[in-house]
Amino acid sequence: MNKILVTGALGQIGSELVVKLREIYGADHVVATDLRSSAHEITRSGPFELLDVTNDKAMFEIAKRYEVDTVIHLAALLSATAEEKPLLAWNLNMGGLMNALEISRELGCQFFTPSSIGSFGPSTPKDNTPQDTIQRPNTMYGVNKVSGELLCDYYFHKYGLDTRGLRFPGLISYMTPPGGGTTDYAVEIYYAAVTTGRYTSYIAKDSNMDMMYMPDALNAIIELMEADSSRLIHRNSFNVTAMSVDPEAIAAAIRDEFPGFILDYDVDPKRQAIADSWPHSIDATAAKTEWGFHARYDLKAMTKDMLSQLSERQM
Ligand code: NAD
Image (cartoon, rainbow, N blue to C red):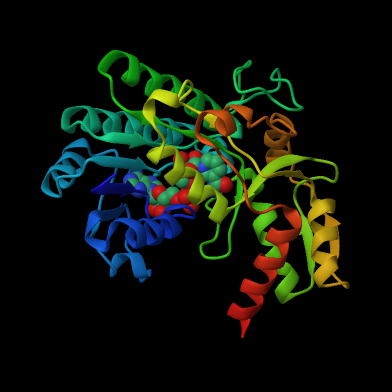
């Protein structure tokens, strides 16, 4: 990676990834783009361009003008929103990905895009879900993610494009709120802990899902992109995870720091149905053996850091 184009850069992942990439590769070497603008520091600390990823000509023009050699494609509609707006999800998630892949092929770029635990479905083995297994999701987001994994494999085999990807679990962070996923509760619960001291979960007790803290997700992207290509058997997309938790486990970890924290439930059937179709815990062995994936934060360490960062921001 030398000159990097990031799409969807103002989202939960991009807003932190761009900062980190600019620290490592230099501010001028990371071109942040998004459909919208904002006052976020990444719009000022290096190149920033407005870009709708469904506009292939605009994407090509920006990629060519900045002479990028790497595309990190993040713009997407997330699981809960995609289920509300399936047609928009298909057009954005598949159309944007196809444009980003085509431009990478024409310009010979290395390519990254995230998949998700949403690429699995009700018939996937739920515990210790293998890297290679049944993927028959019953959500539009899941259909998009499986199709995306296949498309990235196709571009690698057909054109030799250096495509790489991760199946992210729910990502937890304190900088930018999540953008409409099923695991958003696991971020909201920490905000609630430092503001009101209580949280009403839309996800049911005992619904275990994989999660990871944002610093581990950012490291995983960079480590995978820097990995020796010849070691990669899977490419698209590696299972990665740091913990498998339900709302009670997070609440218990919060109570270690904030003993009076109260958790109750008002389950949202729509988002619960999505959660019920996903694995309880996934197996990240392939990522560990092929490129050395290693999560540094477990639930306890993540909770301590989340609460301290959010408390500081409250002051
Ligand atoms: P997000 O919703 O926080 O951000 C998405 C960004 O894309 C937003 O800034 C939005 O303005 C932008 N966008 C929307 N439509 C666009 C368009 N037409 N053109 C350009 N930009 C557009 O999402 P995120 O959480 O940062 O996720 C990034 C990627 O990671 C997605 O592919 C998502 O599926 C995947 N992922 C995220 C998680 C998670 O927990 N955050 C988990 C698994 C996978």
